[in-house]
Length: 254
Length: 106
Length: 158
Image (cartoon, rainbow over all chains, first blue to last red; front, side, top):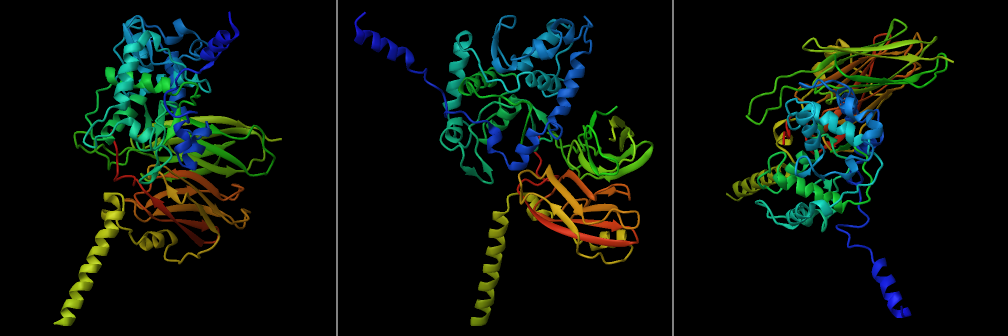
């Protein structure tokens, strides 16, 4: 092959794929006050670790008609769940759609344990979600979009679409204004890491879906219901946008 | 039984003050919050907490609605001998919690 | 006539100023939950004695990001010896619906008169820590803290 052609080929394959969002991506924890950052960094003082402990207990508790525990199939979560949350949301074959961690947990609860689904934002679901998320702590977010192309595109469209009475899109704050002060708070990049998180405002652990719904409310848009396709699609887009950023879930936020 | 955690240093020197950290899982409902239907959520708080070391009470607290949800308390004590440190608490509905840990004096 | 006009102008300016101050405060709580005089509560604890303003250190963030959980550390200077020690620490938040936040009981074997916790603060206010010492003595300290989202009154269930 002529040298010029070989060089062009080399150049072509060395150009990095177009990255979504600000580079490098920065975790929302960096935009919290020193006290909140300290709380997240201290596993004992971080209230979310209480949910992790509860989740560890639930993992071993038999549930439903089948009377099996998560551990019965999955063994020790430290092994079987390692890195799992980092690749969510993901297309789940058995559900025939893209799902986030909470939906995936409930799919198992309903289909495999034959128990009623755990209600959205219930203490048990949050505990299991926090416990599973903890097993990916420190690992970089790495989602696949090849099996979920239409949801990824849907999420990206939502991210850039103006909504609500305030007529703002996510990008207006989280791309154009991150780091700036809105009222008394620093605007974050809108990265989805560290969730589920203990939010001081809620005085409890909450899911990423709950946080995104609060953002919809923030621009006075109608909040999608929990489990809505729009929320999962948005989560998928955000995860891709956060590619490579390590999650320290469960985190703490104001 | 309520969920809670207690932490002390791995070893402590005889007679020297050391830190005891306690975290309790509890909503500490103030009674001022309303649910999305506008109804008051009834108050429910952990109001008493006490810590004993080797059977002797070393710390106690009365908590009000002004203590944050999932109460976090750090206090100090000294120890003359190794022993079991017991933290017990109760809320205004009679629910109780208890965690223990070992204090090792070197 | 001229004086009436001057008085009215001052009244209007004062009202405008108050309205402006009200507008600058971020929440309903800041307007409707005024600071209370906690002296009667203090005197109840001290049984009438006036506490000395010394030896009590309160560590609070200058700005509390969320009033629902404000980390706070109280230190009382004391030898913590059998003859001279801190018996109890009382925390007062003058703007909270219930100003007495908590009471901590220490003893001569506590080693250090220091307690850390997380409190709820219903708005920007002065927080006080009253310490009861052995020998029926009382000392007190105070610290101001700016609170943006007030606990108890600025709730979000979303």
